[in-house]
Length: 305
Image 1 (cartoon, one colour):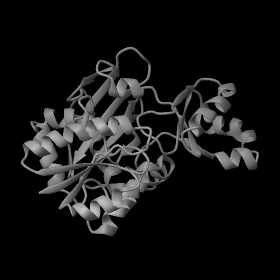
Image 2 (image 1 turned 90 degrees about the vertical axis):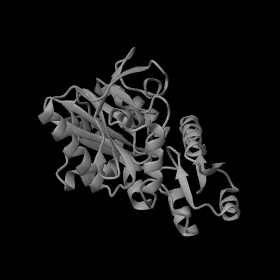
Image 3 (image 1 turned 45 degrees about the vertical axis):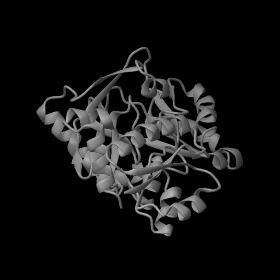
């Protein structure tokens, strides 16, 4: 097949996307496909129209590539693409919206409050920070509403640190969440088609948080897959992860991030297009299931919309 490999773009996760794209390109060539890597830019639509690919493989992360923008263009052009559709991408990208949907479906997720830049700047919302602490407790996590890879995330242990943490989060997006901090084990369930792959546990090597560096620098974290959870807990984690995946309307492949605390597993977010780098969790989970990287790429291609 003729495959347009979409990568790069202008998001803060451009570097990760290029690494994912390079690895996928190699796999697609090994599988015998004709591959045309395309970096997102003003000439994207003309290049797609000239190329007339059979399918687009999306190896994009963050805004524009993972929020439904590119998916909408591809669907308008009539080009099948890998990963979730427009609506699912929009739901996944908006962490606040995702959490409302989780709650509607009875899926456990930490308590949260959402602040917009406009509400703080124009409506005096800063006076409600004490109420937010009453709702979510301390410590809490401040995070942008629509970024991935732990960008802009701060753990807040005292109310006096909330303004600074929100300034950091709002530098990445126009809205931010204050979310209950849950002490527990960082888990990820990758879903391929409608099948949950083995659970991965991420254990940071040198920091207290699974941050951007821990995610993408070799040696930044230690991964255990399958995670040592026991049969009953594994079953519950997978059940909740699949429920979150389906509640947001995902298809093809995605990754569900959870925290396993004293009250059981809770969903933090769903990544519509998870990383495919050498340190990414989806390929590790597939390998633990006996699926090579090339086989995984072939399956993702087969599931293209």
